[in-house]
Image (cartoon, rainbow, N blue to C red; front, top):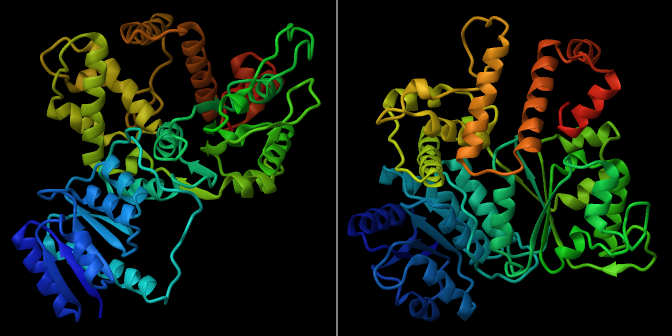
Length: 476
């Protein structure tokens, strides 16, 4: 039996949960406001607090902050019907034991709370040790992650738990799932939030340039280095967070240097001899299986252990459900319309149905591109199904198309250029060139069953040239 303090302003929910929990042998005291909660907790010992978030007076989040100021350690389970990413991350960052989204059926809420109450009571009575991470809690303004599905709620909770510490975080997920956005959320809720957040894509540069970008160089360190000292990303991120995107593609030589930095907390610039202390939290991300790459000798096992202090896995868009898809569609519609200086056109139901039937191999990034293109090309009062265009390789279904003519390819390229120009994007030559070259190689590889010799012959380039381009674009 546990002693529970239930705080909820809805008399129906309060009455149902009180009766359901009392029926299971628990003692339940109730409040309809959170204002008196800290006082009540100071007068009696409770095993757990069940707390609604939207309350008259102070909110559930404000109640958690008040408990933190008073150093009250009673486990609190926050209940809310408004499952936003900010609320979840704030709650966990402020020390909530867990975070529960109120389901439509109140019976389900009681069932979901039962194991959490039991676990919280075990921790209070010393039966189970709580999981603790080093670091001081400090709430911040989180980067915006969108989605109310259960997989995303788990992501929010984990971000809220780990953000306050300096433990390294490894973010896993397919390309386009929002790994950098998750990294920014971790930084925004950390004690380093007022210091720099510096991002580095490990596939964007050659080995030598990546070395220079990360560690910097002394004047005249090598031919072409110039007469000025250049600080690298580690120094620019001092006191803050360094995000290493696609760390699985980092060359093995640089993996060894990165490991030394993590172990010694100091760097040496190219051409330099003196170690420079750096205070940087590392958040890394990859779409690759690092354990498999480690077994193949392509990623250092000791570095993998240092990077994955905590692992966060982002779900692919296809596993997040239709509600998340519609939420993201509405967000990208508003964003695209704002950048074009026009009102966002509504989405016709047939267009939404077409979007829901797609497998989204490019995940959120692909969805953003599809919606932006639809806003640009839409000529009616609504975005119709005909305005929704997918990449030919991912659209699914149908017979194989005939080889495209030069005019077909030109029309497709022109469409992409128009969309990029309409969105006021810059550096178009390199960005679009990289996109089209990567897709050309990926499609040809797939058509050749992954055979690199055949792919190189079909593309009209050498096999070594193909391998270099595959590595540059992060293609297996």
